[in-house]
Amino acid sequence: MQKVLRRSSCVILFIYICAAGFGYLTFLDGVCGNILLNDYHKDWPVIIAAITISISMIFAQPITMYAWRMNFAEIVYNVKRLSTCMHVAITTLFVFVTMSLSLLLTDIEIVFGLLGATTFPAIGFVLPAVFFVSLVPSHLHPFRRRFAIVQAVLVTLASLASLVYQVFVMIYPSDDHCNSMQQIQTPDLF
Image (cartoon, rainbow, N blue to C red; front, top):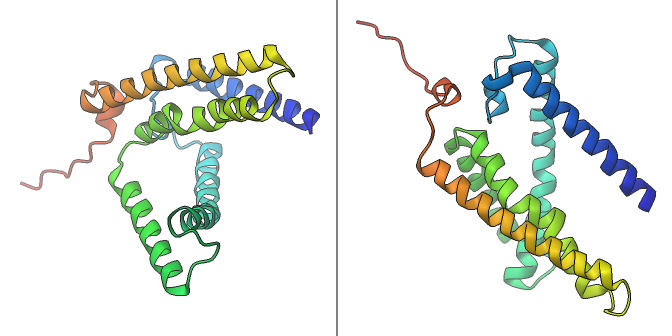
C-alpha cells in the first residue's frame, strides 16, 4: 500500500505540474482563474475533456449523495437507515440545494478558491496529521509526531489566510478580462 500511495502521489504531482505549466505557457498572463473562460479556440481535446468532466460529475453525484445522506442520518438521527419518507425528503432537499448552488454560482473560481482554502487542506493535510498524532503512541516516532503537529498548524494558518483572501476577493472583485467574459449581454434591438 505504501508503494501504491507513493507512486500515485508522484504521478498526480507530475500531472498537476504539467497541467499548470503548460496551461500557463499556453495563455501566459491571459490565463483566467476560471479555467473554463480561457480561449481554447474550440480545440477538440478541450471539448472532449469538458464533456468527460461533465459526465464524471453526473456519475459522481449519486455516490456523493449516498455518503452524505448516510452520514447525515447517523449524525442527526443516530440511525443507520432512514425510513423511505425521510430518505426521499433528504435526497430531494440535497439535490435542490446542490442544484441551486450550481445555478447561483456563476464563477467556478469561487468554488475552487473556497474548496482550496477549506475542504482540500483539511482532508489532505490537517486530518491525517491529527489522526496520526492521536493514534500513534507518543514514544513511537516522536519526530514524526512533532512534524505532524507542525504540519497541521502551518496548513491551518495558510488555509485561514487563503479563506480570508477568498472572501476579500468576493467582496472586492478585480477588473480583469476574465470577469468581463461572463457578463452576458443581449443585443440592442432598437
